[in-house]
Image: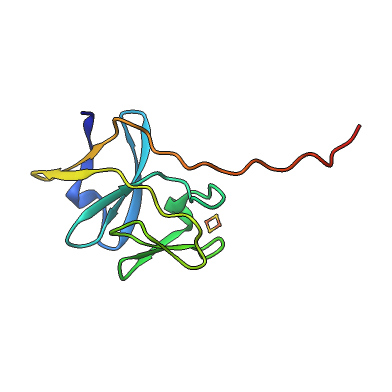
Length: 119
Ligand code: FES
């Protein structure tokens, strides 16, 4: 198991997200008030950094770039999002927010279609 400390519970204000380097893995930690969640840092849509483009409100995360939205507790998508949020396992150890980064989570993005480029 690769549980590592991401931050302290006081490092992330309620209803906000913050990015941390957890043993070389970029992780976004969210404080929902009664629990912490952790996600990969890029939007599943077009890799926008959710630390900047993401807004948390009422347990929902919205990427302001194209308004994809998710339930922050389950990762489930809400229209118009087409992919769920991936989530890391999180546990608290005293005041430490611990994240299991044994396997880095990454989204698969569709390749740009360059076929119409001709020499
Ligand atoms: S990049 Fe986040 S919704 Fe499009």
